[in-house]
Every structure is written in structure tokens, then in C-alpha cells.
Length: 106
Image (cartoon, rainbow, N blue to C red; front, side, top):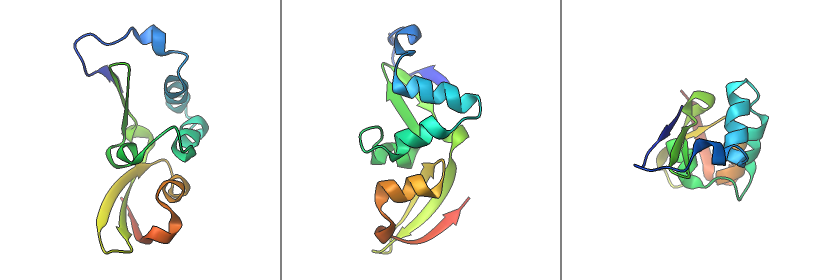
């Protein structure tokens, strides 16, 4: 779902050429490869997007939770954190396999 989160967001047409919009449109069609590529890119996403499952761009809120699975991860320090990613590979690429002790898929 794409929705505005500010009073005067940029025109949605201005975002059509953005990598996020292209990946989201492809995910709506069932092709998750561009979205996975964004998750795996060091510059595309950050830790915040893994935890919350959304992306903000130009005053628009892109809800990615429809295309992601929920993973409950126990790290090597005993803390549990919920992440939202298309697959475990994206999760491992972002947080590192060495930090993961246990994963529960919801």
C-alpha cells in the first residue's frame, strides 16, 4: 500500500523513476527480485526498514509488509528482534550470519 504521510507530498508521478517505486510496482506484479536487490544493497535500505517493514520517500509511505515475511531473530547477545524481509538471505546480508543464533518464521 502506498499512502501519503505528510500534508503536501511530492506528486506521485515524480517518483515513478525512483528505484523504490519500480521495485514496489514489480512486487505488486509478483516479481520480488528488484525488492530483494534493494534489501541486499548496502545503500538501498537500512536497519530501520528491516525492523519496521516500510520505506518513506518524498512524503509517501511504502508499506512493504505485504511482500515480506516476519522473522523473530535471537542474536548472539540473547536479544530478540523482529525483522521483515522477503527471505532469510536478505536478512543475513543485512545483519550478518554470525550475529544470528536462532530464527523463528512467523
